[in-house]
Image (cartoon, rainbow, N blue to C red; front, side, top):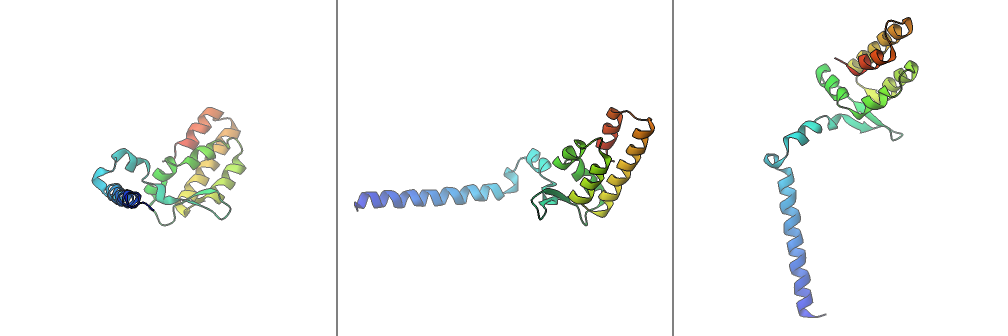
Length: 136
């Protein structure tokens, strides 16, 4: 093997090692992280996958205000709203894909309230969807 090729490869590997360590340190340093990125991903710690590969929102042990904010910023909320007007599927979705007693109880109560108003005629479909999307 030519000596100059070996030196070239050695310098390339050294450069690659330096760059990967330098970039890794920058990514871990908080002063270089984008504030918008932090806000977008602040609830990622609560998202996980269940035993059959579906995304779930695991809010066990978190305060109610954090649970509600995480729910409102979750992709599961959009999937949940697509189930409207099948209220039984919505309740099953809550029981299977949301962990956390406080949030589960609040969502189930909200679905029950909207269901009774929707079927009594006090709300139309648009109002019911809006009410379901505004969890406070």
